[in-house]
Image 1 (cartoon, one colour):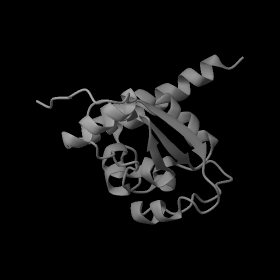
Image 2 (cartoon, one colour):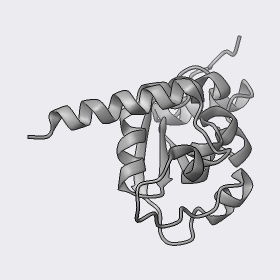
Image 3 (tube, helix red, strand yellow):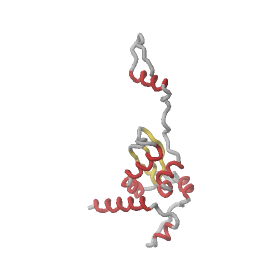
Image 4 (cartoon, helix red, strand yellow):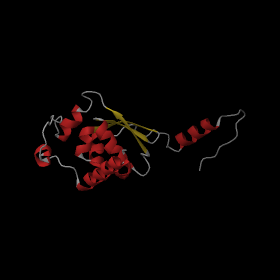
Length: 157
């Protein structure tokens, strides 16, 4: 146990805490980012292709999202995403998610890594299996997103 001897001058509490943490070997900063591989393993390939974390600051993970539709869907699935992330990163590492819209080309590398190309413009109704091909959502994620979309539709006047 570390002993703190009173010194002849006054010292701010923050200085005492920083010194104690440094002496205990606990002064290192936590990583401020979530790597793309870890993000993909936590949220799945489909989400990773359309949303990428930028910085983890004060328990809030800032995430760039492809468009407003994905932002709304991920916002509705927030609790599930937080649970998955904290399973990978440690309990209560991520306490909140902050979504922002990505600029043109910001998610290109994530899409290539996930094997998902930019979504083609579909003008006519098409069968989902033809549009999605092998890129299908995991069943629990699909169910959560469908419930969220249904709830959002009910809230609209």
